[in-house]
Image (tube, rainbow, N blue to C red; front, side, top):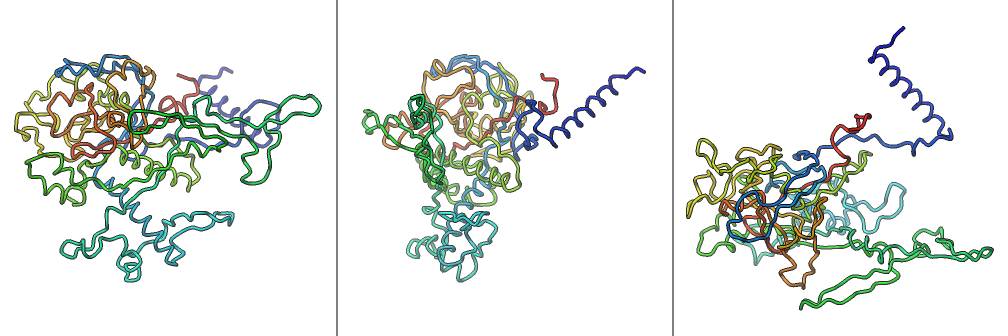
Length: 491
């Protein structure tokens, strides 16, 4: 009897299942089968994000360098697959972050006042948690009189209130967050140095021979001797050596105020009436779906870290594996996504023009001298406005310019790698402003057409906020491409 291909596939699948059951029941088979059990993995598309496949393209200008800036050059690079937000982060999405910070402060204040339900003091093994964690399942009744009395410190003092309005003091919305300095940890001289003990018989040294089994007695394993450079704020750098440390030396703590700079609408334009935007843009529901602006680079990074904790915290709670961090896109990722699979086109929609065949502008920018209106916008517009590019991404040109993760250097294309190019510099607060420059891309509602081009790059300082700069997040894809988990035959 002859088996057809379909029957053969069924037979192979059946035998594979039988083998899997056999090995799962008895792992001591003497065969190399990998560690088991392992969790099942399925692609997780974060809400509001689109998958961008890995690819190679010519990064840099696709048209004339009008201002002769000479800050870009054509360079072939390759970019790993990633997810990217379909739109810019909106006011309402960023407000979720602000409310999280507000509520976390309120929860801990209520806990410290004696309401124990607002924090978690022990883990699942009844071991104490220090400091306690916020209990997000407990509601805060802001209208309750007792709660009002405890949380009064969060509001503007009476003498600072305008027409007696009781409003949260935005100066107190400070977010404490952490990130790991992997680049510092990767330096060879900063790697872990294991403790060695001498064997009495052979006289040879072996690592970790004297380690202790006591909880918290990790220093018997070895140490970290970390060396880096610090600035004196005057352009001079000195070597800093930190010896006998544990790995927490690479965990960086930061605290930042998360409320957007709403005064940027007035500050950024002299002799211009933008007070209504300062008063209403961030908090009024009419602007919920407009891009958040007035956010500094550091605030955008803090948002990405919070979003990661929010997403992975939920996945942990349901027993699912965590995923890669949300973060700001690199320059190369942003430009690759903006091009939408059209490698030589100057604009996200193609080109070479900023108008379509009907004479309609294709983005929100400043199309004419003194005339902001022909494109349909005035300031910013809703994040889903205009047609998306071929990847399905909205407003990759115009509306709000966007932060990237990269430091700005005019010559970075010359020395950055061609595999996932990424030039970063973590400027200290007292360093020169030139070292605090971060790349922004895409142009904004107040920019001329040149800044809408895919290859155009400019910068702003990491600790400043502008009423025309927003951001969107990316997340590195886990694996090579979608469908690989079900494609046992390879590519």
